[in-house]
Length: 116
Length: 298
Image (cartoon, rainbow over all chains, first blue to last red; front, top):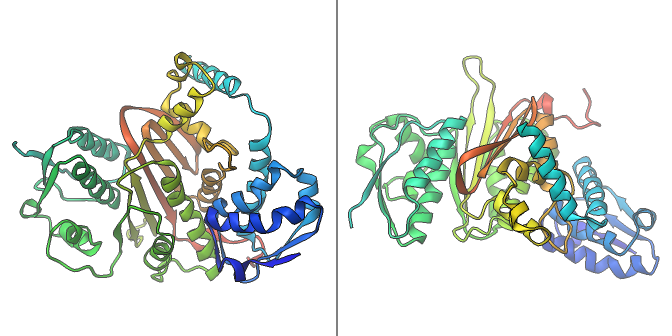
């Protein structure tokens, strides 16, 4: 399966609604183990909300190693590559188990050290 | 009811100047408040002040108050020329038209107008020939600036929208050419949102100990987000990397917190007067050598 992003979204991939459209188009194929290619030829503006929804939320159900094997990305410029890499790193953290009570304790401990 | 007269002094974009703006907000923060802005002591007004006063006016109006701009009190010709040029005076009743110069228009966004904001960034902020960089670099900068607007729209909960204004500083007398943009909302603020988020997981007694500085530090850390059920938390992180690369400056004032990212790193501080809202103030240097991509020739 290959999607030409410029045809579906246009030259700007910056908002979450457009990211959701791509997610909806590729989720089923990836879940069934199919290879998917996203071609970004002609797309020149990128921001994290688009990739959070298009790719980041895939990590909720698909292991990062599987996603990296199944999802091919072509013609993505350097800004887009940096953004998608950061989004994947952050999404992996986001979907990991988090103990927010412990996180708050850690923040308060750091605060207390700084005020000493 | 009598009209409260608020004197607008000289306002630059240093820490004290922002505190002056928050003090003005504090003076006008009641319902049914009628206010007159007096400019007789104002001989300098930076775009951060323009965006702030515009947003504050809409806030007062949303609280059933009335705002009058005493244009006759503004005797400084340079300030008047600047706010006519950037459209601010025209927005608030002064009969004038805008023209192009070094100013970047004052803008109000009540809804997320993606096309309008991107056109503003590309055509008014970057596209006037003063940032001499390649097309793809221009696109990269616009994408990073979009993160600021997207954050305001996604997180602020501001019912009156958000307000922006910028300026191009040509770089004379030894100063470096730079671009400035301020985006301001009068929503709940980042620390308030983070404290509310932690209330789901921890006791109030613990949550109230969180300082504004700690909240902003947490917001800047990669992968942290108050969004539930959807991945987020990359916007500020990416913006910080970009500002560092550019050797620019990013400042955020939100509630009782202050964050700054510049050549010396990141610092987070507490502020005394808790402002209900968020100010993002960014300064980029117009030096194309700072913006090179890895695969561009040296």
